[in-house]
Length: 385
Image (cartoon, rainbow, N blue to C red; front, side):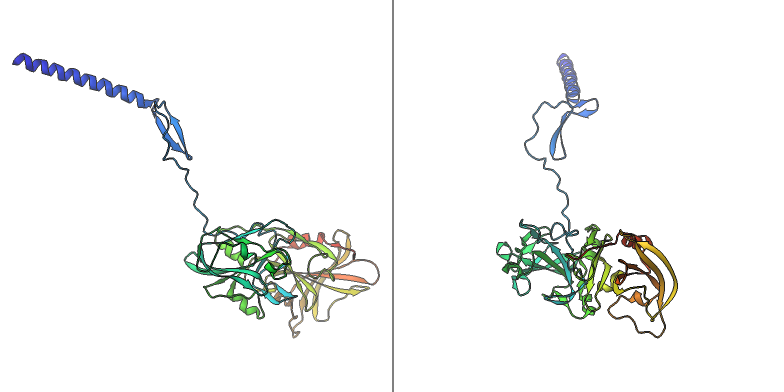
């Protein structure tokens, strides 16, 4: 009996020793230089660590999806193609009033241009509307608030959407309608994009009363506030294609983040910031007028604090820089930005000898002088075609 117990103990000791050696071998199998012999999921694919004896698993290693943006731009080229009518700009053509959104121009492109939903939401309306052609209106939910977007001039026959359908940011809406077609109600190929708070259905593209622009959201501000960068694109004013070009025979660089409004009531050009509330006139930075004469002229309604002769522009045009202020008791200048009634700098330049056209380039007191000087030095006169 005693010898049986001794043999059993020996057996257990040997078994324990064998198990210990097996465990050591197993540990050696899984750790080489401190790394486990296995397959790890990295960047959406299985990566060998150590020297695993088995093949990599066939499933279970999907790449991590990047979080989807809450807000996106409605069309490619949004920044660079807003060259005709933007938020707050006064327009007088087929329609008259203050433009409530941004127009993104594609008349130069034959390709089909897709418009997409800027955020998640529900389709309020998809229909043909006078002045637009195809229209889609979506009530979007952004940051816990409802904002309604109008997407105009679309080929809605190619749209998968219907009223009441839910959409996510980036979902396809429809292609832009073709240039001068029924899809755009005879308008050029472009996207009219407008935003307002709440879910009220609004279809107007213009406001007659500038105060009513407060009911609309400047798209540039909206995208910036929601982390979507709208790049500051810079272009040149071109009298051959831009509004007012039949009067202003000049070409100049429009500073980045700005655009030009033609003011038909007084035949003037207004260079204004794309960002900001209110009308384009309320966001004015440079205001350009003209007169025809043989020599320099000044208004009797202003006080001249100083003046300096110089040359400006590509043609080294003779110029005169004035520091002026409107005289007390004089009525505010109509159709001009409010800062024109304050003390500010104006530069007049003469386009040639004799009786010729003078251009008057006024500067908002808050605009950096370097930006103003860059516009002046880039001025070019353009011969009539």
